[in-house]
Amino acid sequence: MNRGLDRRALLAGAGAMGVAGCYGREEPPAEARRDFFLTDLEQRHGGRLGLAAMDVASGRRVTWRGQERFPFCSTFKAFLAAATLQRIQHNDEELDRLVHITEADMIPHAPVTGPAVGRSLTIRRLMQATVEVSDNPAANILIREMGGIAVWRQWWPTFGDTTTLISRLEPDLNTALPNDPRDTCLPEQTLANLRLMGFGDRLTPEHDRLLEGWLLASPTGPNRLKAAAPEGWSVAHKTGTGANGAANDIGVMTPVSGSPVVMAVYFVGATEATEDQRDAVIADGARRALEALGRG
Image 1: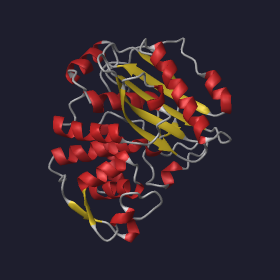
Image 2 (image 1 turned 180 degrees about the vertical axis):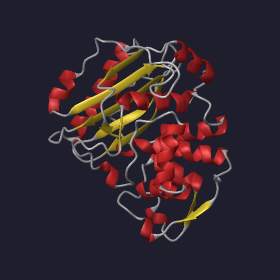
Image 3 (image 1 turned 135 degrees about the vertical axis):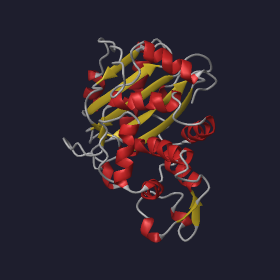
């Protein structure tokens, strides 16, 4: 997702600033700004807001509740595609291998796999469906094809993440119950994961372009991070929505020229708010983060 910039140089530059990643990395993260507050956004409708954002080139960061747990909902699907692409690079999977789709695979929200019942889809198409339109059966099938949830859980530490908790499959992972650690993450850890996925060397250039294309093409959540992006910026992102007012958006926001900004926003508990109101909180938090980073 380098958008024409030298991704390894960006990664090294951020590391030199002490933000080589959140947890499990050799250097501690750079200290975030202490004057960044989102209390009023939380008070608008109730709920709890978590945000972490970083200018990739400079390493400047802002966080709010960055070390608290939030239900990740469907945002995990961006990383599931990355894990599957890594399996392809290791010759453990094939991009164009066909997988038969059955009625037994079906669960709610199957815009691609539903019409394909009785036919076969490639691993490539399943990844695209998982990322672009958040197809739930496609995500579960990819996890099954890699060996099941235990194998999926073991991938995260190989990516440098020992804090994200993988507990259930779709759709059960979206319950977002209060004080339930299952299927939760830390915003600062997601930030580190996104930076490594987008600007590290875990994926080949070909596979990086595939994943970036799917993230850019996703039509979901147009009023979340996309609404906060200044004119002309692109947003490669993955949303997530669940019970208990859970609404999330994570991704890379890239200007026409200059350094990208990586951002992860999680909002949960605003059960009386409408979807539009929750989206507006995410967008407003993202705008403030960009302004605090000098990128608004």
